[in-house]
Length: 274
Image 1 (cartoon, rainbow, N blue to C red):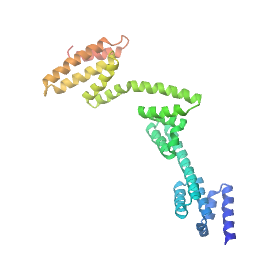
Image 2 (cartoon, rainbow, N blue to C red):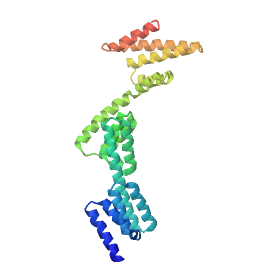
Image 3 (cartoon, one colour):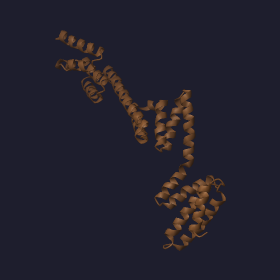
Image 4 (cartoon, helix red, strand yellow):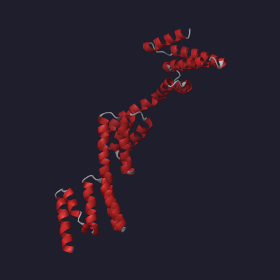
């Protein structure tokens, strides 16, 4: 029996050496292999090399049930690491394809799954973090993009990558600068004039000469005045006064080259009787 088992193991190892992992598995299905720990380990390796990770994990679980020694635990941990690496490679390939078709949200999600699969070491992988930052940035997740970009920059020694990261940093800083106005526009589209006013006021606290922000602040005040006219005339009157002041400030700080804003101001003045 020992000789026969040795022949089975030799056949399996020969097939694996030739890259025929499916053939090795056919050899290892012999019932006698279930009693040999090395044969079970070879089955796990074959499944990993074939990309059949679920089956590989099942075999590793079987090994853990059979032998809980320190040496076996070490081997199982090493094989599980190979499973994680293989799984992350497949996810990265999918994520890169998502980037190619500009599916930014899917790409970001897949790169985040890679992080989960690899573990903490993913945080120090400069290329992975760079691509994650790029996907998040294009998907509108500015805060998430900044986190990934910073991780990439801390761990990168590649001059070409660092140059790209410097360019990304400039883009993120501009996006952060314009974020309150984007939020204001979103609130206005949802007829949430109070929230829009809050965002516009935050812009004007930083830059009181922003004519565009003054103009949109005027729009919000006039909309609120109209909506409150029947329920609270005093409040409506206050919004009218503030709207006119905002419109005056918009006109004052409108650049001479900004013909589009000038036209919008003139049209709004006409609508409100100014």
